[in-house]
Amino acid sequence: MSDIKNKEQNNFSLTKYLVCSNFLSMKGGKAFLEKDKVVELEKDKIKNIYSTKEFEVIKKKNNVLDTSIIELNHHVVMPGLINTHTHLAMSLFRGLANDLSFQDWLFKYILPLEEKIVDKDFVTLGVELALFELIQNGTTTACDMYFYQKEAAKVFDKIGLRAFLGEAINNGREGWVEKVEELKEIYKNNNRINACLAPHAPYTCDDNLLSEVSGYSKINNIPLFIHVSETEQEVADSKKKYGLSPVERLDSLGLTGKNSLFVHCVHLSDNDIQILKNTKTSVSHNPESNMKLGSGRAPLSKLLEANIFVGLGTDGAASNNNLNLWGELDTAGKLHKLQDVENLSASSEALLNMVTYGAAQAIGQEDNLGSLEPGKFADIIALDINYPHLRPLENLISHLVYSASGLEVDFVMCGAKVIKYKNEIFNIDKNKIFSKVEQMQSKIKNAVNLKLES
Ligand SMILES: [Zn+2]
Image (cartoon, rainbow, N blue to C red):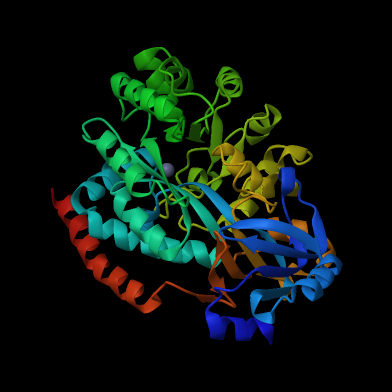
């Protein structure tokens, strides 16, 4: 009864301990399941982790109240997932332009549509819809690339998830420095909202712009996300125009380095991989988006063998068409088995690492995020194991990769604040969001018609 009392009486403000029957810390990227652990919380962090035996002693000694305990006794408790690449507001484009190649999808459809319709209200609503989905499936951190990130930040702040927000930068788009500075200033005392840089791609940013962005990232020590070598054509065009692959060109302009996360990296030469390795540049791997747009399969095994940090990302809902990292895990595993079924670089552990500790490494946050250890932020999720597709229990690690779908996530905490409990999500007005999303559809439909007419 203690958990129910807790929720009704104080809305979790007294929660100090999580009692976990199955505990997956992901410490050091290792998928090692432990039994009967208790997580102690302090402010927004994990203070300590005890065995339940140790906790019994502490309980008696310190007079621990029932209202400070949440029991997760038929669950796997693990770090909240990290989505290393997405365009959250594009959730409003879900289902549009399904059967197109990357070139047609982006240049004939998405970019003209964005030009017509994306404004502050669009981003606010799109991010609300997206965060609702992230909470459903247990993602507590998202690295986003889009416009009007100040509006996105407000939604993250209100709902309580962790954000790395990159204002999209490309040729002709003025004022990015001011926007990033403003975001930094507003959230300087808020460790959940982080300002980043997001030059869109090597083919939408010229050399001068890329050098400026790189310089700014280095001086201010700010993470940088950029789409790189997503399609064969991008690589061929780059070689023709600059005599360099996209990775070689970005390296020559100073965009490689430990602050940089290169997204997609589907078409890489061995030299490109060597550059990423030597410069400690990380990669966001987005297999479902790459499959859906027919872009190809990233050389995951080679990247992992080179000890390059790789995090999984869903990309936006316009090319996936969801923001569910459990599906992404399953797809990534099976896709790379096609390449080499015995290659351990796509093991269940390696895959889980790509949405937790390894993802944190890819965005330079391994000291704060990605595993459940004292001193780290308390970004914690729990999956209910009472589902047929998660039995037999013996093989839970494999089930997390190949069987879980996200519906099992019935507890979500970010920065020690409970956001979802027993499948109830707080701070989200479902009906309001859904009705606004339907209203927005007529606007999008009109914009699509306008585009087709012009
Ligand atoms: Zn993208």
